[in-house]
Image 1 (cartoon, rainbow, N blue to C red):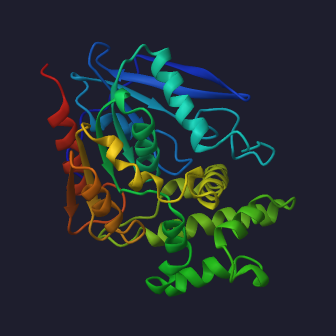
Image 2: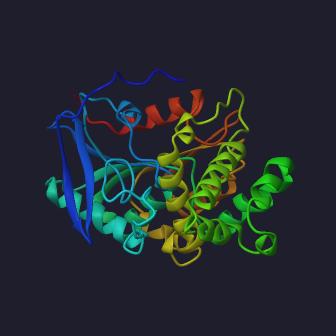
Image 3: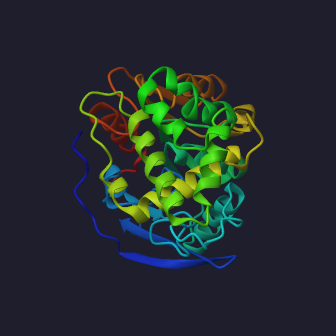
Amino acid sequence: MAELYPPVEPYDHGMLDVGDGNRVYWETCGNPAGKPALVLHGGPGSGAGPFWRRLFDPAAYRIVLLDQRGCGRSTPDAADPQTSLAANTTGHLLADIEQLRQHLGIDAWLVLGGSWGVTLALAYAEQHPGRVSELVLFSVTNTTRREVEWVTREMGRVFPEGWAQFRDTVPAEQRDGSLVQAYARMLASPDPAVRERAAREWCRWEDVHVSTHPGHRPDPRYQDPRFRMRFARLVTHYWRHAAFLEDGALLRDAGKLAGIPGVMVHGRLDISGPPDVAWHLAQAWPDAELVLVDAEGHGLSTDTTAAVLAATDRFRPPT
């Protein structure tokens, strides 16, 4: 892992009432007078842990983290089967981001996103380009129907034994249809044993399809039954709706990003998020630089982390 900035604690935090019975956790770290920077975590459902703070120079940036609806410290918790996800859509998350920006008195901010956070960051920037000073994105995804089908079915060509277990977890009569829909149905089962099996197998497959780079280690968060349930419910909810976006809209509307400088960092070995997604976006967004890291996969390893740090350093103001 590249050398991150030292750990830093929040100087302020709170719970923002965003309506629909939801309260979103937020925190600010670093320099209160620094350049505002927003972190959009992955998943959906991972939450924003302390690691994200360390991707920025705390002397130069006012770092804003939030836990998206239903996860992390936000309430209600999607790990609880009775928590409705009806008011948990991309449109709701974009409105939450804008409400938080206004709450904190920020005019515009750098937006950093990883994996699912890239999809959300692109949707936000295309909807509110005047509020985004720069974009720093890694493990680029658009969460299109093609990408969802790739991860849940076509990836079986790369990891046939792992995918067979993933597929065979769902009822036999559903195995030739949408597997993300099938898992979502299992996660909504009245039988807690069925829900738990679906969450466990979904997260096991998540660990398989991101394991292409040397030194990969299983995600320890999947050992927590509540994290597994929260994560699986939110991922399947967003994936089965293709991020609640018109399919292909993020690439189609990339012209709206004109004038926003950006850096996209992507591992050449990222099979779960094939590099062509980032490459096509770079062709449509002339103000972006695409950094392809040859020996790394999905997420942040040594060289991808170094590239993200270089990007936030490039965009930081003088201290």
